[in-house]
Amino acid sequence: MSACYCGTGRDYGDCCGPLHAGEPAHDAEALMRSRYCAYVREDADYLLRSWHASTRPATLAFDEPAAQRPTWLKLDVLRHAATGDDTAEVEFVARYRIGGGSVVRMREHSRFVLEDGHWYYLDAVTS
Image (cartoon, rainbow, N blue to C red):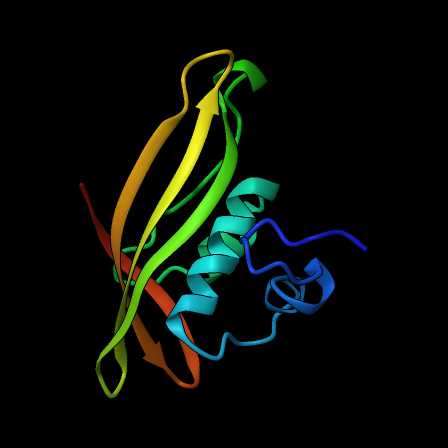
């Protein structure tokens, strides 16, 4: 057993693992946490599956040399709010480092939409 990368303190198999295996997220925050975990695990397939079709890129690859890829360090969820019956927003801070560089603090305000019982990442505004 290992702690999930998303910061809940739960085991990966009881947290983001089931979502990565195809179970729907119960809310936008759970989806956002599972997407962070997928970035840590470099799971491009899951990231594409959980991205809304209207904003999803055609491809996503983790093909940069290892020294140029981020090492994800920590996730802090600041706010999760329903904005409608089938929309929600999540604000978070993710910390990462590339190579031996300084820690970068990325703050993001993400929007999510619920369709056919599944939450999808729509887009984000970074600050």
